[in-house]
Image (tube, rainbow, N blue to C red; front, side, top):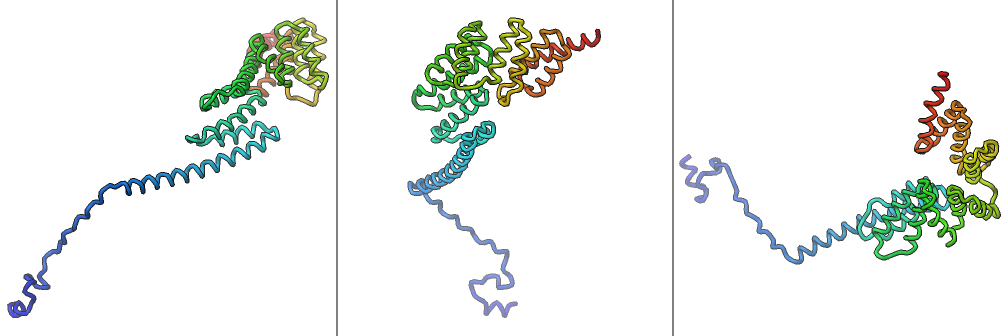
Length: 294
């Protein structure tokens, strides 16, 4: 070991075979100062990310809107509603104008489906996100509210709203106006507006239902039955629900509770969300049970 020490490198104090555990000192990297240039890079990355997110999201929303519009034009409102709802997702800042346009169509779908409360809700959302007063929006919202009042059977409150809309050019509301007059006891004006409708159209299930309801109120049972049967035989069944409800009332007034109950049961199965139908079913369930027990 001594001879070898004479020939080794003087700086190698321990010798090649006697080097202790080597622990190199790590040099700490100097942190670069946060400069405006660095800040600009981060801002640029965020902007690029937002552009990508908005681009992809808008592309999906736009595609959903176009698909929904094609269904809307075909009057397939139920399917269109589902796609219009998808077109509203996600709700992003700066896209309020696009979303409001979608909501206009969505609200109109609800009106055509008879979901007037949902239509009013969509119009209220449009008003929240609209940056200026829109008289057309206010008008449409008011018409939807009038139809909602009609659905709630508040005919006196609905009449002035729907009458004004009809006089302003919404000719499709003529039957609602006539019905409001009929439900408030003004049969003369009801007939005037029904006659206006009949000048260009044939009798439909809605009108038969209204005439049947009036006949039932006046206890003209044979006349009521003829209107009910005529309404049921029409090819256009868009308002058959009202006719079927009149049929329940008809048998109830005849005190044929078993038949009335059977009609009410079928009605509730077909229209499970109808409150009036459910109430009739509950009442007749007890009555038909009692009559059977007797």
